[in-house]
Amino acid sequence: MIRAIFTCIALLLPGSLLAQACGTENLLDSLSGAERARLDGLVAPHVYPEGNLWLAEKPGSTVTVIGTIHLPDPRLSEYVAAVRPALDAADLLILEASMGDEAGLPQLVAERPDMFFITEGPTLIDLLGEEAWGQIAERLTAMGIPAFFAAQFQPWYLSMTLAVPPCAVQAMQAGGKGLDRQLEEIAEARGTTLATLDDLEAVLRLFSDEPLEKQLDGLRVNLQLQADPAATSTVIEAYFDGQVRAAWEYGRIQVEAAGIADGAALFEEVNQSLLIDRNRQWEPKIARLVEGQDVVLAVGAAHLSGESGVLRALERAGYTVSPLPR
Image (cartoon, rainbow, N blue to C red; front, side):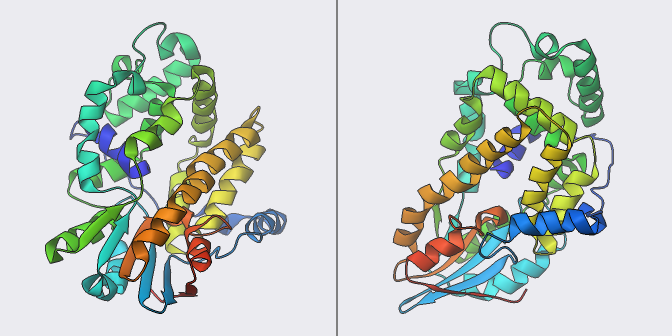
């Protein structure tokens, strides 16, 4: 999902972004004993909470499952090397969405500008107020985006725009790719069949179909949480530590600690729509695609754990699941 947003936003960004390092700080490492205990308590109910690389097996079918991150990072080469033998032998690669899907996004923006932009009525300058907009305008300027242009963004779209670390955009503009794209290129070169799980327009509508006021509430929450640049770094470092569920639940704690009105409810809505509901929609499709085949299944790492997660879904389809070393 975030990968798709990055693609849309990259079309709007110039190549002269200011240099900024993504950093390597992981806020999970600095939690107090009580804070860590709270986090562990939130993580504990979820099956398969740790690890990004798994093997699911049953007679006649083997599925190598890799949790992905959609940001470029040189450390991804370790995961590519780990999954390469399975991909070389696979009948099928399954992704959330493909490069072909993303190539259609500019057309969607052109055909449905109302999904991405405020096409009538007051702009975000009026909706958020001068003080809040002034802070946003400073961040947009640092990213090389004209504030007057972004004032026409739908709130969900602006929220996603501001969530993109400039270092990630720079890496993408320099040709860097997330793990899913690297695997897709290998599969394409080998002539391996590709299948996808998502309808990208439908996923984007999870945001764009929200009432404007709810979008604005979400934007305000994200602005408050994004004030700490270590937030993005924490997600990246937690991924490479195999602690994606912990990073996700830490987001819940951050929302609560910020004292944001209805913040906990907003977080749970996102959890339900982006993780639980999508996982449930994927489950029958995954079961059908993997049956009788050797497959590499590469989806965002947050989708692996939990009762609705991809690994539990494979168990329900009759597979035995075990971790693989990186």
